[in-house]
Length: 606
Ligand code: GCU
Image (cartoon, rainbow, N blue to C red; front, top):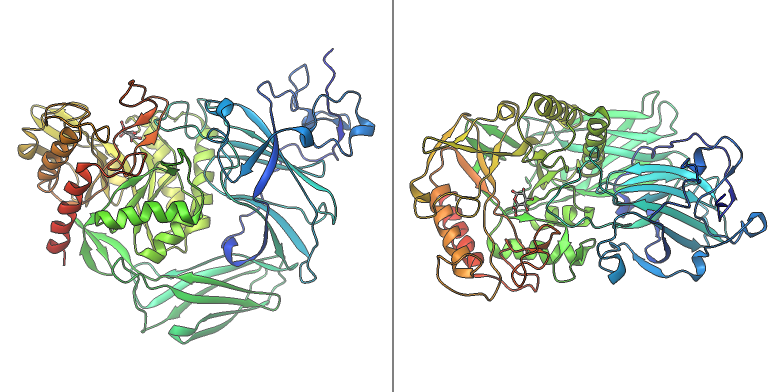
């Protein structure tokens, strides 16, 4: 019998402990980072998680369970030790594992992480939480040998309370990370991006008083530009707790009282608001004070709505001059995760003349969303319901809803976010429409103020490009991807293309483009040359500006990005080459075609 090589005593816990309600605005809270060097153990057979009967150790009835775990304290209980975290190699957190060690480049499976740390709880704090910005794809989290819980979904944050477990000395935080793809997951098994695994975003300990500000929404009321509406939720609050909301620049200083559940809702009139916009990204200092803490945020106020074919920002018709972005620092060839990475991407977007970015195909880290607020870039935020997810699977729907909930919970106070996207290029069917309508309803139940869209597809019949996807009836913006001149269609004919779009709604081309190897030059007929890509953009843009109700576009894509599907030797070599900028940060000729087009469009929408 294969002896389990690490035996630890886990206090019996409910089998699947899901993360607690998300703690929002963590950058302005009292936190201690756990970023840095973590030990890791590769475990492709999940030997530390399943016994030889393939039963999860931490779900076995008897008190002895097992999981990979620092063996300081287990040694005396161990029958056999074959692993020792402290003698194992290290990974940097945050960061994907694929780009840190050659042997992990293609790795898909389980890796165990361990971080040891001492911790001095500060006097004001009665409660502590461990917070993960994201772990791709599934995380099982243990602290000091006790299972905190499980999280599924690779692009949204989660936290667990650790108050009764945290010690002053020798804490050991162990995380089982599994990035295996599977059919029922969100995203499903097939995607056109690199499956970066790991603790890919910040990890921190959050300190809170026993009653703390858990969450809040502070935005302009839907269809109003004079009323700030929202709620504040306290955790562990008695009824009638005093809460004070101040926005000094608006002369707002409102005293509120919570209800029996620790929540309070408010509507505050204001006639002085300077509205957030790309040209004037005004953010207000907002303070929430209770008897236990003061929490600051920086919030912009703007209205976003549609009227027929128009998108109205603060009541004015706009054109979304966009670009698609993957969460990858192409020069590092790795997941992007910090302010520096976000600045590189958004500075390029600004240089291109953008007022908008499509963060594809999953929620990006909070650094880039907060930076978009500051820089004045409107944002399309999307969950990875991509291509052929398992639309008939209730668990897949619950997972997609949960990822939406976590994304909206984290970002609902960000003025830059104007669109929640439900999906990308999902094949129409009744189960798919039911699935997407459920996501749309779920989104509206959480946020009635922002627009809802999805990247649909068009089809072609009798010489006409047709967009008649039934789900378009339920979207505020009809967005679709089209690749004239790359995946078929004539570039010469493109400017005369005929369109039949079945909705009197704003139309956004959520993707178009083609590949070019930066530095490869030739004629406009030669695929993969910069000249071909430039001509493709010229012809597509002539077509796009004539599409009925066109109100925006986000070409695919800012940078070349890693994809296991793109293997053409000496051209792709594992990179999708549709970037306007190479993975060495060099702009291709098509970058300037788009830049010129946006300069022209900007004048039309003055
Ligand atoms: C699709 C898809 C992208 C993909 C792109 C491509 O439209 O949405 O994720 O990378 O096409 O083929 O390059």
